[in-house]
Length: 67
Image 1: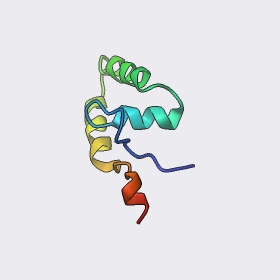
Image 2: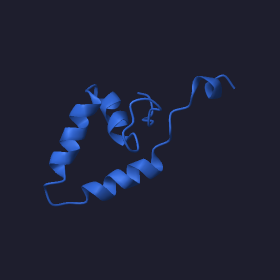
Image 3: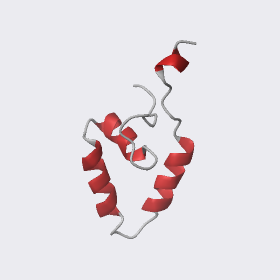
Image 4: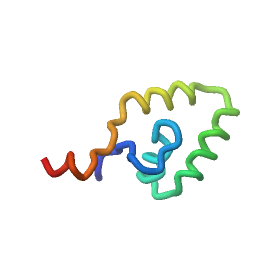
């Protein structure tokens, strides 16, 4: 299993939903809708998003992986 990384392409804000969508094999738009729907429920969803944005590494570009 590979590590989750925020992709450079397909980001809207921080790339968290795009990274989770790649990990779970769904589209980024589906993951965004799920996140927005979850924000209607009580809980720390927004804080979790911010934490994932801060702690998930950004995906390395092809030039960076060559080194």
